[in-house]
Image (cartoon, rainbow, N blue to C red; front, top):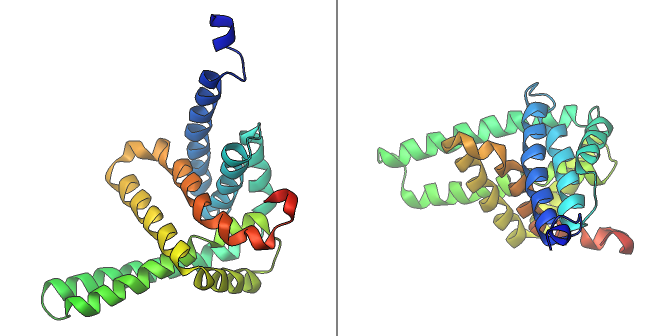
Length: 206
């Protein structure tokens, strides 16, 4: 009985492996984000590793992460800088709009419209690095494809934004979640991103 439980393909061992992968991929992502300029590359690598490990059932997720990180290191630098600059600007805009609404200088209706706009941008921004991990394109083409894909699949984009908004909030609010939530968030993101990519993928990769 115990021998069957400890078999590599037993439900218990598969679950333990997935939990371990979730923790270590999150830690790898954190370390990869420390230089800041490699945050986008680390995000692309984590998405690639999580997708293949949890959705495709492939093994060696750690090796997959480091391979994808190395492969996307140089292509990911410029998109990371652009993404971080845009994110900083949008966060500042969101805080400003909130403060203006609280003090009565801005109607809550206008604030809701701004919040919706920022949510759409968050969803579109969440597609950038998964696309980087999947396709080889230039920076301009990467952002162009991201915007078109996000707007063409707006319901999925909004769902993706809500998931990432919750993940970001929990990671900021509860530090302990940084040890597993980044990879779990990437896994949840695949539920929204993969349907967007399905029409553009070879049948064997669907």
